[in-house]
Image (cartoon, rainbow, N blue to C red; front, top):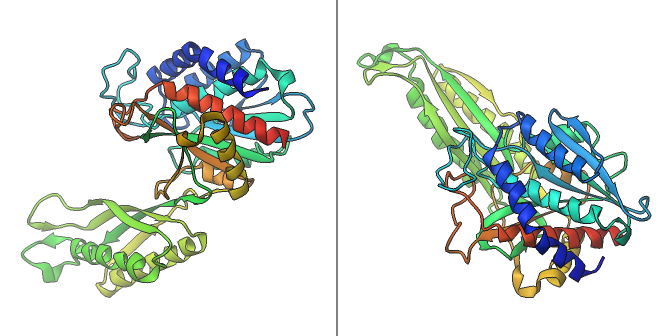
Length: 395
């Protein structure tokens, strides 16, 4: 399949891509509840004659599209099904019809791009070799991450996946531009939940209490040294607390205080060590002041690693397809994505697609109630993804 044929197919399909994306955007569903979304995608695939299996990890969809010489190589592409618990603030015809639920992270775009890729390649099966495994994954936004569940159900086998691609919207770049970063790209993410149990009482009689608020304050302060004094300063790490709750009135010391935060890291060995340091500090300070601490650090997504060789090949294909000026080097990010689970199993390439309009419109960040895209980004994304996948299949 030559590059001009692909460019034409990506451009001519824009009405279809827009229709699909707007339907998905208007009907978002939360993590692991994507029943209607999966049904819509399955319906599209059936209409195009593309075989697939439903019910993977709950609502997930997996299939294999074969070209010529299907036994040669197998490349996978993953897209996410779920939306976020956000009330959309955009005034557009395709605004979310579900109060309090919104595709604010661009998963509607990612699903559309994968569908566009499948539509084009299914129409030109004799023009490429190998097998394309496609995965529409539930629950990217919610622990434990649908990616881990899909892998546990064997999506990387039968046939064995040789490489996997994922893409993500990026409003910090204009539509028509894509970004890559080889090696370490995004952080691991772990939740931290702490409950400090003391002894409540009158605020005027603190000697008769065990004050969990003052203990919590010391714990938060001490935990900052996990990053500032224990982690290697050349390896990014973030420890932040976004919630502290305790007490009801100003003159009563409460029985307990609850803290919730997040640990982000690029180094998996350090990540494990940091868990132990956090536990030691929380338990040590609580014990010193005669309180009891309950600590839970559910292990979340690992750090996201882009295979350097696969990413270099994909970037070269993007430059062929778009031109050098439309391809950028991405910076490290402390955000996370459960595509990381796949990247720890097989060579992976996770890249970004610009979605703003000349960096003046559609600039709201992901996870924002006014997030939206310049839909011309989908033409770029579908074509670039297809050209990279075809290059990898041909070997």
